Length: 165
Image 1: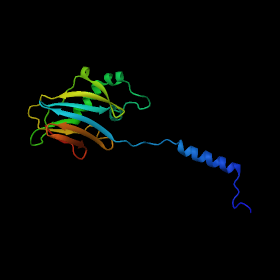
Image 2 (image 1 turned 90 degrees about the vertical axis):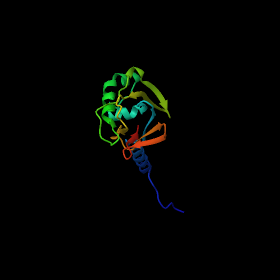
Image 3 (image 1 turned 135 degrees about the vertical axis):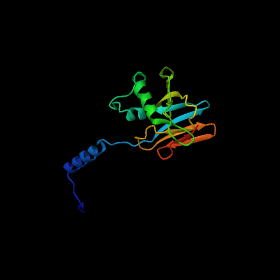
Image 4 (image 1 turned 120 degrees about the vertical axis):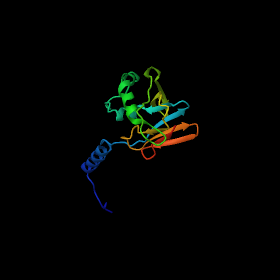
């Protein structure tokens, strides 16, 4: 009985090369972006922000790993970004001119689910603030923030950015 199809050695080499080149092609991975936080009485907020999210949002070079000293040296751009993206509103949801402040000497590096996070405490002296409009990492796909409040947990996202203070 003769084989139905006789394939040459060159054919197998070509197929092996073709499939290995497909496997080695660059791909973009998709991962969810998650931040964590806790709202405390007295207009105080503790946030934990993934270093990888900060790296993308602030357009830091992605060709090398971040170090903690690199993050701390970027405290001014980080604070500026937070002030632009964490906005205070009054009871009628009218914007207020006050901002959230953080002391970079109190920043900590924490590990959550095998990912490094910047943990920072934010405060505002905006006594009329009743709402926080959360816009951190809105330029990243599917960012969520899980915030503990005295009333329970709340998930903030681009679709649901309001947090009652």
